[in-house]
Image (cartoon, one colour):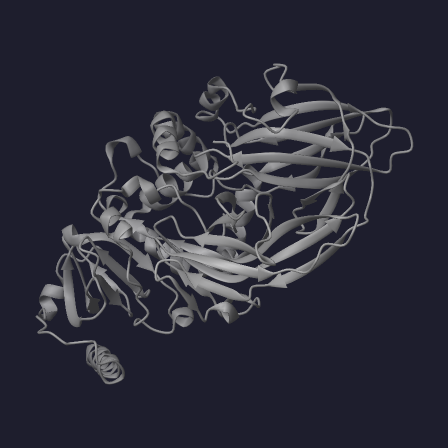
Length: 528
C-alpha cells in the first residue's frame, strides 16, 4: 500500500511537470523488483536529496532513497545537464555519483528548482578544477571600486544547517560609490547550497578620527586613539608585540609543538598583553584583525562529515534539526572554538567576552567593549584552540565616543552575472523571513544599493548585514569507505574529536595550505 501511494505521488508530480513546462520530455524507465530494492541495503533516508552526477545531470529523490555499496535506489526524476529533459529513474550506480545534496523542500518549493551549473562547475564535477571550490565556505563577498573587485567577507560562516541560521555584520573597506550606488558581488565558490535570507548595506557616519568596528552583538563601536601595547607574549613566553601591533603581512600563529600537544590533551594557546590605562578612563575598546586557519576545514570536512560517510546526510538534515542536539552542538563548539577574552582582576584572569570564528579566506575586523580594571595597567589574555586562529592585529583604545549615525540601505537591483541580466530576486533578501535567495556552486550576483549623500565633516564606513545558512554537498570520496589516514574517526561532542582533528591537521596542514592559496583569488588590496 505504501509503495503504491509513493508511485501515485511520483506520477502525479511528473504529470504536473509535463503539463506546466513543454521543455521536459519523458523517457523510458527501468524498474527494479521489490527483492532487488531490499537486497544489500546499507543506508536509508527519507530526506529530500539531489544526487549530482559526474556528467552534470541531477537526480532528485524527493522522498529520500536507499543505498547499497554499489547504487542509490529510490523514486527519482533525472534532469540532464541543460535541464531541458526529464526522465524517471529508480536507481543510479554509485560510480556515477559526484555529490549528494540534502535540500530544503519547504524552502525550494519542490524538486523542479534544479539549477543549471556553469561550465566551471561541470569541470569541477569531473575533477579537473576540484580545488577551485573545495575550500569555500558560505557566501563570499566582494566590493567594487569602479575598476576592481576586492575580497571583503565570508558571511554567516558557521551556519552549516537551517537550525544554525544566524545574522552577521561585516565591515566593507574597499568599495567606492559609483553613480550614486554601492555595489557588491555575492558568489558561491564552494560545493554548497547557500540560503541567503537577508542582505543589506549599513552606512555608518562618524567623526574623521574614529574607526567603526562591528561587535558580536552586531552593533557598532567607535575605536579612537590607539594606546601603545607595553608587552605582548605568547603562552610559550615569546615576545610577539611586533607581530600583533599593526595590520600588515606579519601575524601570530601557534607554534607546531603546541599543536602536537593538542593531539594528546585538549589545551589552549594564548597571547597576553599589557597596556597603560589613561587616567579617568571609563571604557576600554579592544579591536582585532584575524581569521581562521584551515584547521576548522579539517574538522568540518574530515571529522564531522567524512567520518560519517553517507550517514552525514542525516546529520545535515534530521539530526541538526533537533533543537536539543543543535543546542548541544553550539555549546560544544563555543567551548572549544572562537577567541576568549579574559581580564586580570589582580588575582586571576576572568572571562569578559567571546568572539566567534570567522573563515579561512578573508580577514575579519571586530571589536569588543570591556570594563576598565582597577589600577594603571590592564592585563588581557586572548585564548584559543592552538593553530585555529591567525591574529594579525590587536588594538586597544580608551577613547570613548558614541557620535555616529547608522542607516540601513536595501538592495534595489540584482544582476545575475552568469546570465548577464537583471533578476527579480530583490524581495527574497529584503526581510528576515522564509524567503531565500538560493545559490548553487558557480553562481555569482551583483547587488546594487542606492546611498544618500555624506554629511559634511563626517566620514562614512560601509558594512554588510546578512542572515542565512548553507548546506554542504557530500563529496563522493566522503561516501565511500574511510581512508586509511582517517583511522577510527568518530564524530562525537567530546575531547576525542578535538584531538583527532589536531592529528589530521598536522598530517595535512602543509598540503592543504598550498592547495588553498593556489586555488583562491584573494582580490585587490587584500593580503594572503
